[in-house]
Every structure is written in structure tokens, then in C-alpha cells.
Image 1: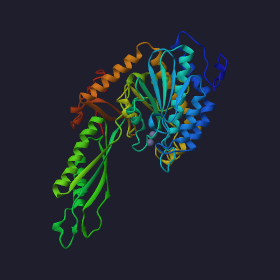
Image 2: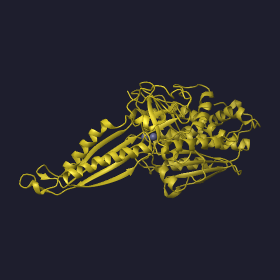
Image 3: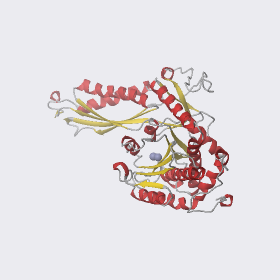
Image 4: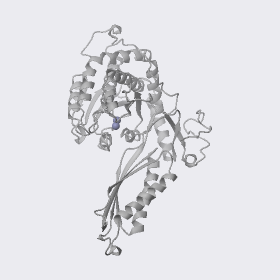
Length: 480
Ligand SMILES: [Zn+2]
Ligand SMILES: [Zn+2]
């Protein structure tokens, strides 16, 4: 707490600071002090969410405590159970003057049997703190624009709460989307995540006695096994960042029957949405091979998962500036400028990043005794600690700084959008991202031409955003 640095009179637990015409010089300490002021009220809220884990789309308690908390803050309009989802919500703070519209997403869901082992309580804390501080900066400095807080349910599994909100039009008119995610390895605002999809395969054959008259049957299990083996063979020809996992969920009825039915599930991940599409076509061909070889009929159901996350460099630069200038800089440092951080997981914030400029900042909390990553019991414990909460507040400060930069620096929003358009165009033009091992435990990645990326030699990196990038033109022996 740095209450001594406050000058003006305390009003609820909002933030008061010295109103200055030179916003940028004072912003850092004002945002820092503002969020510190929320420390005592946010800690019990963070603790409550952590101690009351709720599954995807059943985040009733979190929905209630968060919306009640914001409703008490001056100037916020809150909509509960928004866009047809019981646990989705929207809170808006409007300056009354036209300007950029910034937003923060708040995840609330936990994992079956593991509680808050993905630390979404910390995501909620960071985004909530950031949203409240941004609103205070608008109020104190007469900034234009609006702040949105979105309570986004169901991120775990393939819930896709953010996709539902996106499709329902919740983000219409919103210029940027900011969020964060805890882990134990990285501090980085330039985070790439994987795209993934789930393919459910069913084969329909014809039953027959396996000893008496097998020639009358059509073996659905054989079709599935052929597909399984074809996919296993395919794996040698995929890119190192492609992941294919397969499970047989129905292997037939009994060993003395020619199986009339068999089923399986395949989960595929790739470095970009466009690469995922290619991989999906290759896996579908393996499914067809099983049907072709046996005569069984195949039915494939494709459940689209999440798109990869495309981080915005301009927003990330703001985040880094605030993160690095705040006191007590934690380890590890944010990678040097323009270095992406690869997180081998998927999020529906990826789909948001294809709709608008986005930051999904990774932040490292102190690990538990087993050094458990997210989705482990160890991480569940780590994400409930005071230290993790304090780290989430730091993230909230850097996210707020990023939003306030967009609201207060003339022309910055155009720069952010220009970068987003270049990223989207590059992806459409066939550029994809290359995964580069930076250290044994950390990856970075960058935009490269797909032609080169597909080549086993991968001699040259072409970065359409920044030809002078340190990796451009250099040999990158990757994926080792
Ligand atoms: Zn998770
Ligand atoms: Zn998560």
C-alpha cells in the first residue's frame, strides 16, 4: 500500500491522484497507487473465487460477487446474465466523450476435480483491477472513450464463452481486448497459443459371425484401426508444432463378432488457424482411408476448438513499458522486444485476437513444491497464495497502463489497429508462425513464410513486420 502518496480525499475505495495536464509522466505512479488502493478489497474477492471453484458456465458465485463488486463503483453500468448466458456479464464505464473503446476479459471457471488449477481467479483479479484503474484514470484526466469489462464464462474444455459473446455481438464497437494468464515460466505480453480442433469419427459396418461367416461382415473396427495407423504414419510428415492425439472410444462389441460399429476421437493442435485447417484435411484423409479399405461408412463430426492467439506488438510495447517500470521487477524478465513467447495451450482469447487487437499476457507466479504447471493440484495451491495475488495486481497495473496509453496517446489506437491489420494480412497471405526454442524451457516464435517453414532446412526467417529483426536472415535450427 502506498496511501501516503495520495493527495486528494479518499472516496469509496476508488483512486484519487494529482490531476495533471501531462498525463504520461504521472500515469505510472497513479495507476500503481490506484491499484494498491484496491488491494484490501480485491484480496477477499480473489480468495472467495479461488475457494469456491465452479465449472464452465456454472460460475454463479463468481458472477454474483464480481458484478456486485463493480456495481458499487461509481459510474459503472452492469448487465448480469448477458447475451443469453447465465454467468456472462458486462460492465461499462463511459466517459461520455467519443474515443477508443478498451476492454478486459474476466475468466471465472475452474477445472473438474482440480479446482482453480488454471488460476482463473488471478485472471479475474488482474482484469478487474485494470478495468477499475482505467476508469479512474478516465475520470481524473478527462480522457475520452469507454472501458468494458466482460465476464467470460466457460474457457476450459471447449466451452468457448468468448466465442459465444463474440458471435452475439458483445464486442461490437470494442477496439481492443486485454487479458492475462498465470503460469510458472513466463512474463510476456507477446504470447502465442495453439489452435485446436476435435474430430469425432464413427464407422458403420455390418455385423457377422467372426468364425462362421466373416465374409458377410464389414468390419468397422478395422476401418478405425487403419485410420489410427494412417494417422500414426502421418505424424512423421507433420510439422514439429503439429500435435495429433487419438483415442478409440468404441472398439466394437465382442471378439467373436465382426464389428458393425467403432468410434474414436482425435484432437489436433497447430501453430495457426490456417495450419490447423491443413492438418485437419490430412487427418480427414486418414479417416477416409479406413472407410475405403474396409467398405465401412464414415461419419466425421468436427468440433471447432480455439484459434491461435495473435498478440498485438504495439499494445505489448505499452504493457512491457509499465511492467518494467513498476517497482520490484520480478523474474523472469520479459523477452527482448518483438520476441514471442510460445505457450503450448489453447484459449478462446485466440478467437478474440482474430476479431480485434489483443494481448494475452503470461505472468509467472511462485510455483508450488512440485513445480506444477497449470492444470496440476500443485498449481491450484500456488494460485491461491497472497504472493500470486500480488503478482496479479502487478499484471493489472501493466494492463491498465496499456489501456490508458490507448486512451490518452493521440493516434496510438490507429497504430494498434494498423499492426493488427498487417498481422491478419500476413496470416492470410500464407505467413505462419515458427516456433523457436530459446532455452530448454522457453520458446519464442515469429512470423515466417510458410514455404520456408515447411522446408526441413528452414534457413531463413522472413519477418514481414520487421525485416531488421535479429532473427531475420539468420539460421534458426529449431524444434530440436
Ligand atoms: Zn486451463
Ligand atoms: Zn486457463
